[in-house]
Length: 170
Image 1: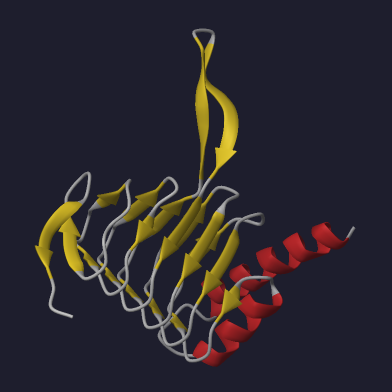
Image 2 (image 1 turned 45 degrees about the vertical axis):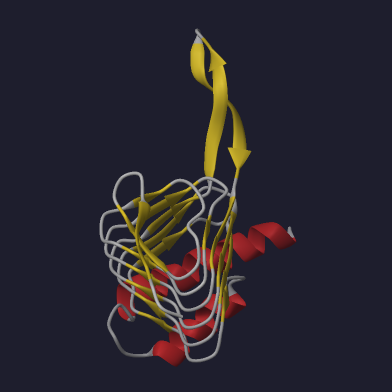
């Protein structure tokens, strides 16, 4: 019964954020609602909304982050975001997929992923992050990129799939 209550509370919290608080205001109230719904949001993090996070995914967001509109977490995996990260609009984390099945049905058994964005990163608009991947500390991911493998720290990466474009000074 406890899991059902948590799921309902998360649905209600996200509904309130997306319906009544979907602006660049009321950040403290949005943090409060997300924290009590099981989504860990650090101090001074600002969530614009709307956001879309399923009832099973585990999400931890550090302190002093900016979460742009249209932030999405698909699947039942884990997303961990460090401190002082900035996310443009429509960033998506895909935390689940399937094994390759038989010819009868190619989407086989479901699998979950753990994705992380380390502290200090800037993730551009419409970036999609998939698989068991990590975006290294203080990196930038260019708009519309697809991150499907680990990205080193202190680099600009872009493209589909995202590749290192430039090393940044530390």
